Length: 305
Image (cartoon, rainbow, N blue to C red; front, side, top):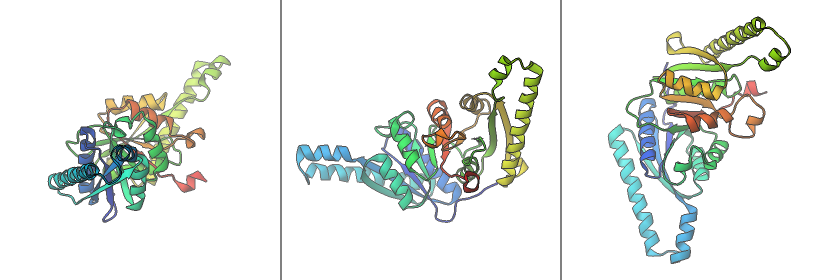
């Protein structure tokens, strides 16, 4: 099943030295080791903080230089610890500015295969799940984003890949195979009977509505199998799951029921309006789930036409 990253691929982990960011960096190190990638550890010093400090002390003050040296030493120490612990090459990077801008630029500049962030942290990372900064980063970035919630004890075992057969679905499958090559995939799709309430209000009998429901379920299963075939998944590498109802709710339920340690989503969804904003399902899962979340930013060009 393994689809490793290309040789010398780079995994970019952003850190603010908080416990959540440390867990994210440890997961990033595992991903780098499992896929043969290099790990880059990036710390972004908020530009506003530096500006404020210079207003107080004046530019070039010795205290500013000492603070910068301390941060650099802390970053180098964290990189060295990861390198020793995980046995992977680690590059330490430090910059200043607006966090989501600097992270996205670093990911592009170094051709990162995936960007890894903690779901909890200090400052920017603390606001990742519910704050607007995460949405700006996801909207700006063209790289897959892995949001880490759990302390990484082992490689990902079971990944729930939620698809809606939009142009983003194929990219989600490809992304998880690169980040979690050993995980068993659960391809999931939620379905609903179109206009069920209106059909019932119009007097359509329950037997007919149930027929539509069975047809919608069958269609979803067939499309999952077609997607797996297109992604070249082998029979023992994946399983199909479909459920009726709201996708956001069903994803959270299935994540817990199947003990999935990774949820994989596309950046946007089927709705036209979701192309303007971060997809509503993605936002809900980031806010309410407990597993790590991989957000794929790849869009299938042929399907988008």
